[in-house]
Image 1 (cartoon, one colour):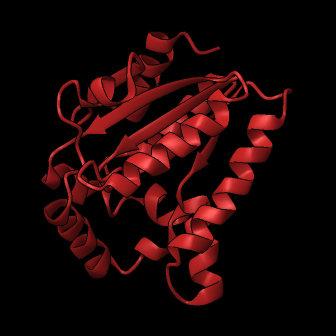
Image 2 (tube, helix red, strand yellow; image 1 turned 180 degrees about the vertical axis):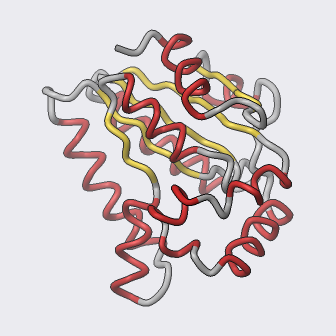
Image 3 (cartoon, one colour; image 1 turned 135 degrees about the horizontal axis):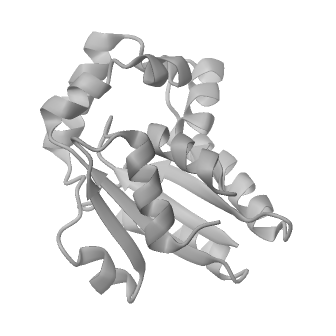
Length: 189
């Protein structure tokens, strides 16, 4: 089994690249808003603990299911927050303890590119909470100012040991091409 943690700053294209990668591999996409949106709808706002508990159930059951090829999970990793390191390690351990190989692909693009992507039709279709464009754009800017959402060169490798890692500066790389880079680099079926 394979686990790909597809990470990057807000609106960098994680879900869209994940969608393209799922089309050309046997990997299943589990993007972060698949749990965020139902929680917001039910409770009227974001609840981190509830969202994480839902994800944990899915991770546990998926990793235990020997018939699956693998999963793509997307999320925004604040590298300056130890809790995010622990979150990522917990997901990776859930899969690795069952013999899965863990991969990391990071997408990176400047703020202007991400703000343009923040209003795309595909994003708004799958992420209802982003439809208040003024609030969503403000959140993209605020998150980028409040946290370090791009890894430092060699940081993941040094903190996590020898890992399968790829960074793509995807400002001018279409989602299908980024997906192909990931597939080819890691040899995904």
